[in-house]
Image (cartoon, rainbow, N blue to C red):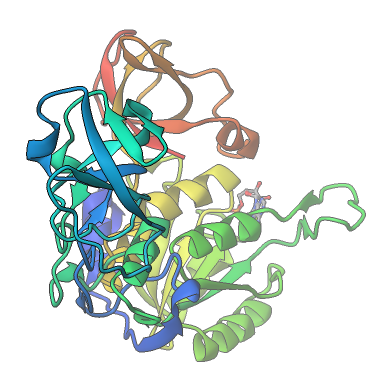
Length: 401
Ligand code: AMP
Ligand code: MG
């Protein structure tokens, strides 16, 4: 192993990873393809939002001073339909205009009363209370033209994409998706749909990892499943490194003689650390293969997922300068006993219940790192500090799954 950092704290592991950078490039995509992508530039608004004063309610527009003595009766001089209908109506003293939500405010009017607080007979509207100035949405009150409303690095959520549209952008410069190769290793692995023979299991990690990569807005490719031979592994890593920005392997990073990912990285790769003080998920390694960054994730399905969330995702966000997708975290009260470990940051899968006195974390499922059902059936993972004692009722940090 020489001088390679071994069994490091999670924070140190992340620091080591951050010393390896990714080359990102920018591409322009149509607006509707920018969901879950990372904005590459500061994006200024091309318009004021709203572009003109408009009504926040279906109702009537009038001069506020005409409405202070209720019930007030005003003459209805016209209707302004939905937004987009420009009009030349001017509201004079004693007059009102019927108006729809989003429609431009007529000249002379300075307030709105919603339709349900009025009654109309012929062309006379009776107002049952005084009108409201705050039901006029003012030009530019949300954004002014030229203002940067989204900064480079913003992970584009549905409302973020809606904001891009509101600002007038039809296409968006985004960080080009990273191409991530996913390689599962192990002689025992069969594809779902195939017949299992004795000693074999279905390969599941690559599917979960693909979902996690997509969640971050990047492109995952499942390469073929590698058997436990150095030659096959070497060839697959060579292929993966020539065509991808990042390689994720699963399995083969523990202490055993058959843990070939660790072995090949020690002997032929550039290994930056091996093993992290994290449970589940202590075996991972990080380094480069032909200058392509590579994470060797553990084979146990829960462990590979945990290491992705705790180490790979933060590093990818850092490398792409992305502010999301955010990890949702909160504090919850322990409702059942949970077991920390002496020297590792320990994550236990829990159900989260929302109660009047706050969130409660219940550990209900057996916590084996091979038990992916424990992950699929849980809403969160409590994060337990090494060497600490936890009792029922203690407040602990939870990361939502
Ligand atoms: P390993 O680190 O290769 O010894 O794998 C640890 C455990 O995870 C073993 O029980 C493997 O069978 C299992 N495992 C390894 N890779 C996968 C995978 N891709 N999908 C599901 N289980 C796996
Ligand atoms: Mg294996």
